[in-house]
Length: 129
Figure (cartoon, rainbow, N blue to C red):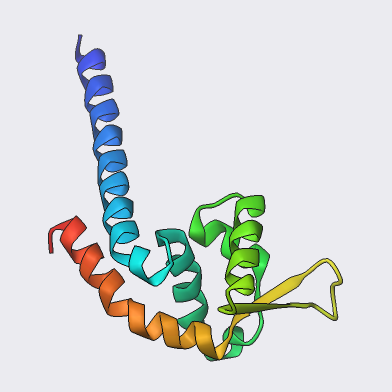
C-alpha cells in the first residue's frame, strides 16, 4: 500500500511539472505572438544572444539541441524559419564540414532586445513571481 502511495505521489509530481511547463509555454507563446515568435523561437534567440563572447560568433547547431529541448530535425526547421525571417544566419564549419554554425543577425539581436522584457514578464506571470 505504501508503495502505491509513493508511486501515486511520484506520478502526481510529474503531472504537476507537466502542467507548469504547459502553462508557462502557453503564456510565453501568447505574449510573443504579436512579435511573430513562439517560445521555442525566443529560446534559440536568447541562447544565441547570451552566449559567451567567444562562443557567440560560432555557436554550433548541435550544441543547441540539448538546450532547447527539441529534436535535431525540429531545431533545424526552426533555425531555417528564423533564417528566412532574417533573424539568424547559418555558416559551415571549416574544420568539420558536417558542422553548422548559427548566429544572430543585427535584426535578430534587435528583436531579441525588444522582446526580452515581454518574455521575462510572461515567465514571471506563469511562474507566479
